[in-house]
Length: 213
Image (cartoon, rainbow, N blue to C red):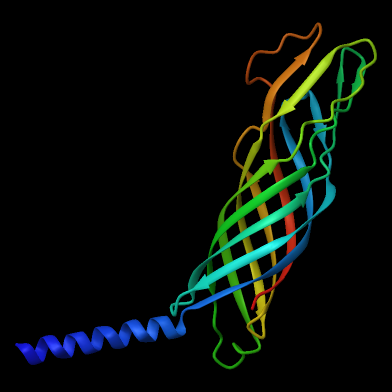
């Protein structure tokens, strides 16, 4: 019995050491571009595609099973533009464009034996929250008093693919599906809108490059 317990202890310690030795933690800078668009619910607004950028730091932890997670802290600029018409008046709200974005992804790397030291494809998915920096800048509609506020936290769900080169350089592309209505309140003189009637969700493509040490 003692020998069996000793053997199990040795095996357990050996497995633990193997996992620790093979599991990997990496961290490094990450930069990229995004093409973002607000998707309004209804005919009041029209959204158009606009380019922005993102930069920050990414951390990654992978297990020996090629499954892991990555977490990033990014400054993101999103050039949102909306256009609409209210009672014959042109309407172009100037929304907040600066965010701190925090994506958290589950990642799976597909190791191809012959070439995995040169490059490895990977897939990833997970939530991301963009926290608004500053306030919406407003707009001018002449004699009509109008106001649009967006929410501080804007949530998306990312789905993406990428390639890792020489175990350090990761180039990935993803799409973020908007999960929450970002419009907090909407006020226009002479136009009666019930709470929650004006809705818009974010959606954007992002291409990034990260160098992890």
